[in-house]
Image (cartoon, rainbow, N blue to C red; front, side, top):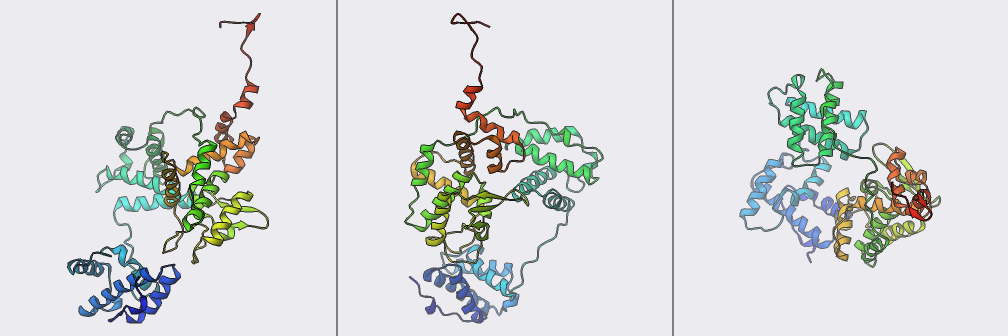
Length: 403
């Protein structure tokens, strides 16, 4: 294992060695990784000194030149910008290296997409994931049009239908049509199209409540939870995440947004940061509280992040939604079953509620649905109650009547 104190740095970065090392240690890096990062810093500093480059003149282009020189020198590790990013982030935070300027939108399409993004995020208050997906479809649509003149004022329904047909060969029809419909609605509201063309987007065949919610049985849930080795840091975190998903029915984004101050241990409630700006409270069941407390006390690393669930390896930043999905996939691999999404555990939590005697109103409150129609699908899994509602088949003298 490397020893950080043995790494010698010469050149223009010498004044920043102590601060960089302290930051790495605060982010949870152990001695070996700290020494590795300091070696990269030493190489950058020597390279800068040989080329008479000052700290304030270090640009992304020069970092690319450094990486090429590092490769040519025979190094096999830290050959990408990601490998140098801890050092550059530290120098940026100190203000000694200028942060790369964000290039403002310049083309007609870029300006329109930025206006669309602001409209979705600020005026409609949509979640970041929804904003990102709608902007992606809008960008794809604009890329199919002449860039010198988008000609939206001359846009015809036949062009819209042709785009949808082409895209549906590669992507989900609901995904494409929802994003395009939102974009065309914005174009009309902002005066870019004289006619409301959102209605020209083909509708996707869908029958509300026609399917059963996809849920895991109790045995499978028990296997997933049991696969977590709670003697380890990873196991405690993964067990807590899976427990929160399957007991509270949270979305993956809501799990990542959960902060330390959102848990009221005395009152036994959680503050849930839902879609957009919504803030709602849920009761904290004892088993969920025990799993989260075990992670916080004996697993969660010390770091500046306020999120409950963080990376177990340095740098100890908050988990993202894909990290939550990765935890569920890993549990499926451990028990040898096909992978399921984190959202499947939300369905699992919801289907257990009517079996435990909860009504649709209570299920809707826990899942935080805006419409009772969204919750109604879970009534179909309570077969015992449905049998009581079903009328007996008509008979005459014990014989079934043929209708």
